[in-house]
Length: 120
Image (tube, helix red, strand yellow):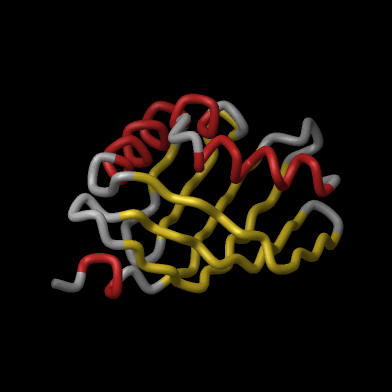
């Protein structure tokens, strides 16, 4: 997956385009965000991401590094979360996804500690 596609993934999220993000997945794709239960399928992925977007004002991903091995992509990030109260919290994160032969994401996992985001 070229770097421009990696950038596209995070641009969709940073623009809060849940449907666009979900469209990158295979119809039966699996999405796991932190410690949350995995969600399956594009509609559930879009719904889950939309729900998270409602809990924050905005977000911005900064790509630090990335690795690609066969169908797997690993991206190291710093993510700025702009809270509803106006404060900004930056946390490290890693996103890992696997693609099928058509280039659609079959499994996407985000490893992040969101405790600082929701701390008082």
